[in-house]
Amino acid sequence: MLPLLSQATPGAGPNGDSFNRPADVTWDKSGNIYVADGFGPNNRVAKFSKEGNFIKKWGQTGSGQGQFNGLRGIASDAAGNIYVADAGNKRIQVFDGEGTFKSQITNIGTPQAICISGGPTQYIFSSNSNDPESMDNGEIYKVQLSGQVVGKFGKAGKMAKEFGMTNSLDCRTDTELIVGEIWNWRAQKVTLKR
Image 1 (cartoon, rainbow, N blue to C red):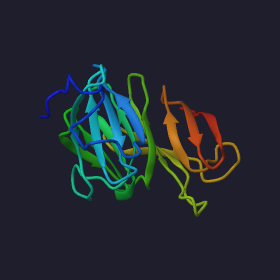
Image 2: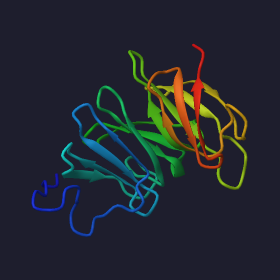
Image 3: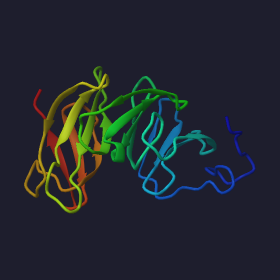
């Protein structure tokens, strides 16, 4: 485990260890902060205390357990597990709060943005976002924390409940989402039926 750097600038990691276009951030119930640093060559998760002090990092470029190829989203559940959208490897990897690999979720396309709903039964929502060259895919998956897909909705496009390169999701409940889209320059509020 890396020591806390109390003399360094808050949020600093070891010398020469800086962010390269971080994609997303989440925090656990203790206030620890987790940053998905994976648009560039870093392909890692960085963990900080609630005061902003660097604690540790995990991950590297690759396709094995705990390796990443383009981290795009990160979320945490009520139990403190960390879910990482590993877009290049077409999966979500699940870790405990210390970075120990627990499982992976596949068969959800290319996850670009993820969120975990509140409430007594939590769900993962994951966007299978279309790439900039096509209007294929675009749907959003609803997944149990165990990894079982329970539904999906939407497609690529510009109309209501169609999505143009979803890059952010907010899901306070399992029926209300806010979907941020790059192509359409908008955020949509989506209400799902139970």
